[in-house]
Length: 90
Image 1 (cartoon, rainbow, N blue to C red):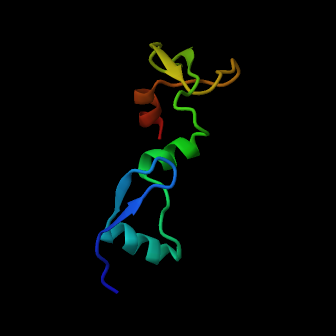
Image 2: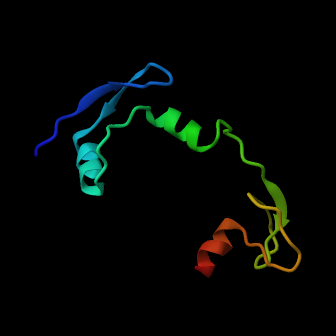
């Protein structure tokens, strides 16, 4: 089936958003039968429980020694890495 872009009204904010043909293909491929009812920003807000801020903690990178902020409370028995050093560890 060839899909075409559809305009849908968000059930939360009432704004129109585009349900693209490629998104429709993805939904079909995954077996989803219902179209989205919320725009992307309302879906994200719902996933985050309405909060947009995540609590961040100060830490010192175990590899380079630079200070960094991480989204979890560091424990002293486990090393914490800055984003650059963490990417190199993987």
